[in-house]
Image 1 (cartoon, rainbow, N blue to C red):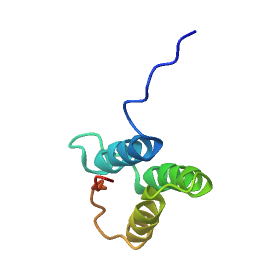
Image 2 (image 1 turned 90 degrees about the vertical axis):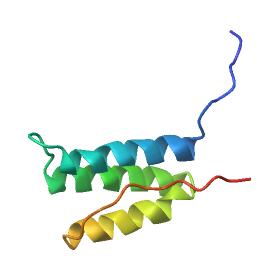
Image 3 (image 1 turned 120 degrees about the vertical axis):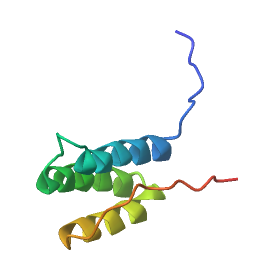
Image 4 (image 1 turned 180 degrees about the vertical axis):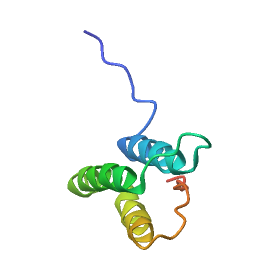
Length: 81
């Protein structure tokens, strides 16, 4: 089996998943409960910390904001040169 190159880094994948979950907080007509979003972000944070991904600090900030009932924004990924 021939391997193919990755088009996204693991850091980008975790960030994208976190952004999808965060976006679900603000869907009109069908928003997700904050406790569910918190649970998913906690799981993503654990993965990011174990893999030592740069997005871990951003996930931690989003979790703190969510727990303090502060509006949570999407994660903006910085391009790594």
